[in-house]
Image (cartoon, rainbow, N blue to C red; front, side):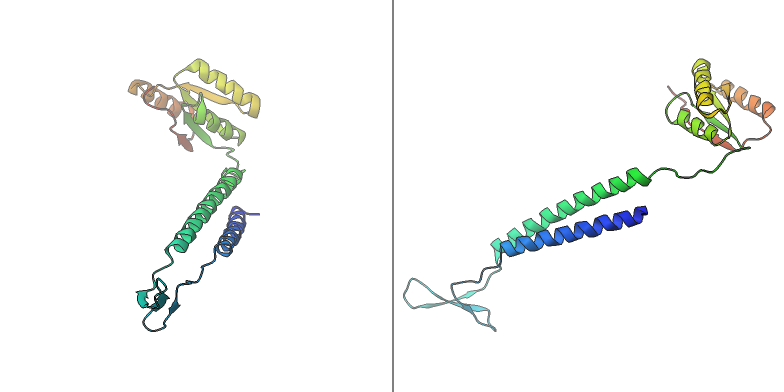
Length: 198
């Protein structure tokens, strides 16, 4: 089932549950008729007995405040429950489907990834190597970079080119660019992951 289909099923089930629960609340607390008098149709006037004296009062019929409050509380509770279930449903669908499903190859492509010794940069370089790309990682710490290149090779059997690059130094950046221009025939993708500070 697609992500949209799963969300639809969750929402329909939740709406049915909320409607059933709200209906139960209404049946449990039905609106009680006023026992003090009879309402007239035109003037909305209620005739009531008072103090056993036989006098008649005319009073305007007010809204059933207590019943309305109970109904609103029930509605708010059901809406909160509905919102929580929808959020859980969306989180479930996100966990299952919010990942790249593409298996496209990068064979024949040259990719530079900066800051690839850890975190997002490292995983990006690894995934690109898994897709057969020629990966060049530009890193300040050459020892860490070589260790990462070996790790990627062990997992993907794809060699990774290591070049020195210090984003804090414009001289280092220029040297890196000159080296790439001299040694590479093409460049298809540049992923600027490294930070200039830190």
